[in-house]
Image (cartoon, rainbow, N blue to C red; front, side):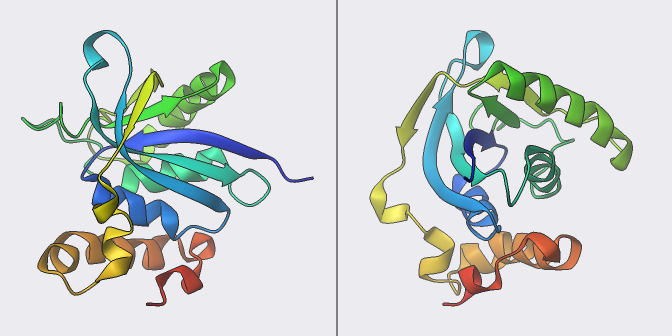
Length: 168
């Protein structure tokens, strides 16, 4: 019997983040919207909730891909709207996520700013924006910002990409 788990990721525009995870083998569902945590991170920030089959892709690789597909070492003025975060639903995922971030730090020139935060709430994006990239890959935003992320996935993580998910 396969196991599914949920994790949420924030880092950049949720239009970009949505398709990154939609293209991965083992990802069952991606919900695009806004996530809040607690304390200083209680405001809603653009993010996706990812349901994945642990028999096909693990948390380590989801985090690895997330870190490489947004500016995970860049602190900028828009970080409230685009919080670099891993939102966990379970304590075991909190512990693992923190361990994985420590392990992966060596792969980056700059300091990772990605936070591991408890998931508190989700607010869905407007349905007209669901599947933003896959609906029209030729939109200027898609060509400028999203297509390079897809190219990076295909180059650095081809073993995890479901080529059928990119067929339009």
